[in-house]
Amino acid sequence: MLLLTFEGIDGSGKSTQARLLDKYLRENGHETLLVREPGGTELSERIRSILLEPDVNVRPMAELLLFSAARTQLVAERVRPALDDGKIVICDRFYDSTTAYQGAGRGVSQQLSGEWLQSFHRRVTDGLVPDCTYLVELAPDTARVRRDEDEADGDRMEAEDQDFYHRVAAAYDALADEHSDRIQRLDGHRSIEALHATIRADVEALLGEDSGTAHARTGSSDP
Image 1 (cartoon, rainbow, N blue to C red):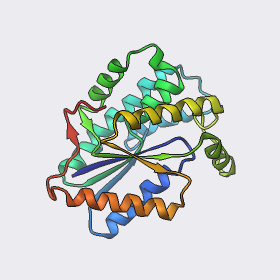
Image 2: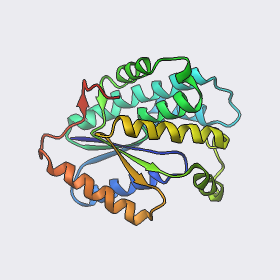
Image 3: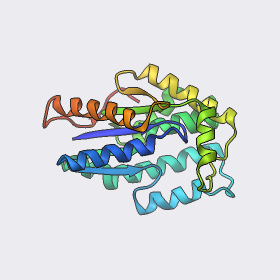
């Protein structure tokens, strides 16, 4: 049916919006699948525990490959089957996160061409492209305050310095410009309720377009 992804830096509120959308759709009679990255399958969750462990030293390229391995498993085991069953799939992060975090944040894109990374993403997802990506944009300094206010212990990614997050935010900005037909920018400084209302209205419009034939794109030039 539809593949909807949520992106943004840690602390942006994207996960909250993904959960709210899933709840709204289910309450209105839609079959959904809500998954997170990395995670969603037994293998992917094991990879997640390695990637987010604060005391584990993971090299940038190894990090990119591990995130991508978890994504491959998730798409094959859960996302593709759910889409084939006519469900709306909501994914908390997808390959745009790899471009922003590992590509720009870790500097892997300096070693690889953008074309190589895009081609790699297509192979990892077997050509699957989201129908719409909701990018919750928030100033890195504001996101840091939010993360610091969270009582939960931070993971390895959240412990990165502000220079890292500024690079990630800049990469997301560039992605939104490059893929403006797919990526919808949302102001993360707005209230949770206001953001949810905007997303809800947009998804309802997507469901109204070509009702019954909407599906995640395959073979697109995106990513």
